Length: 237
Image (cartoon, rainbow, N blue to C red; front, side, top):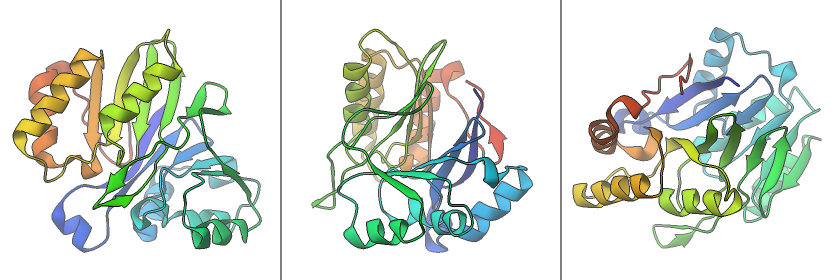
């Protein structure tokens, strides 16, 4: 199954101009998060020759603007879509999504999206002393589990441990996405890298809010098992 990065923003300038966030395409019909800049999101979709009429499932990790902004432009045109959200999403956002006539699915626990693609369900977390829950995506591949995170507000370790609990007989081949390590102390990042190795995470592809320092530490520690992630490209795992 092919996984492509549609768009990502990961530095201070991109955040300042609101080209921030992340978005992945899994297979041909599942999108995970929809980036923060609709223009860049839709431009990249066109460049990548993604047929939006084939999209049947959109999973939104959490309701921050940088993960949901492109959604409105898809569901305004295409209605035969399931949109998966956490029960804790802001009520106004829930109502707005529903007003487009798409099927809104509130995911509490582990749930199958299609075939071997799952949502972790809502995992509790905090950000700036505010409760913020999030869901991640799990692809059950032949070689192991691929976990894709939006921002990992609950903590990347917390999310991966939840995945291991729900798939006790499977190894986690790879963790991709936002790890929410931007601004963290180096020693804290190194501890997290060490813990990921201890629980058997074989490959990593941090991006978005992971931060350049964290990406460098992961690259140094994981070496050939570090996956560079670039927008508009297939992610080679």
